[in-house]
Length: 287
Image 1: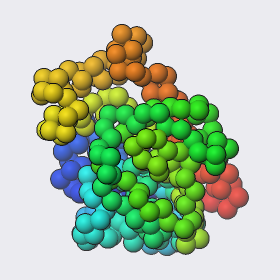
Image 2: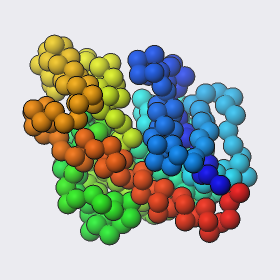
Image 3: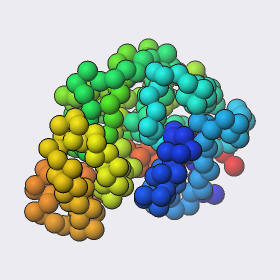
Image 4: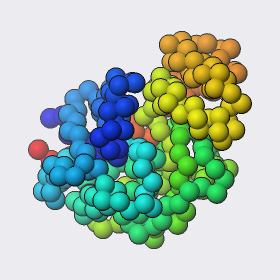
């Protein structure tokens, strides 16, 4: 029998609708497509805890899933608005269910706060486009989530906030010069979460669409000098998505197969399915 995933969308209704209008899919739909590309036998349900009155699974419902995946979000978790508090509460329920869970960017931040850690704006500023020179820690070098990753690698990323105080049950698995918590395992409340601060689920095309909506940030924060320069960067990413063998563009932007090869770019998600979801489904006799 196939795998059953719950994909938890971190965005509000307006934000995910904007993403669908510009990319064709909501972030949760895009993430579900990645999961189904890796595990074609899987079925994905979507949850929208940012929405007031959202129909969210209870403890028994969470236990019926083989895996839970949390997307990124435009929200800032330290604002603690009702749409954020509902997501923290849901993450605590996910821990309590014991269901294997994984998250990208916002997903890692929610998991950290739900386990009594803290998240704040990064004093080093925003990481945008790609997280560079990600290096596994000693714990990460032997951890199955990073199996197959080299001694240093890049990954799609866009975030200002970071985990500033890891919770008690956190093992940091990868770091770089921008953030010391780039990948982590968190154990809390009876469950274990794997997560990354970057976005292994993003194709270059999806990343290009997101950056195309953030010209003001790219120029205002000094990543690009002009709007035209930002547009050229976005165009290069779209061209690489269409032609990943464009050596000229890969060289210009310092990208290698860890980013350009979809199988290698999604390594952490593949490892989550291989090392956590499938074995625990079998061990727990899920139906």
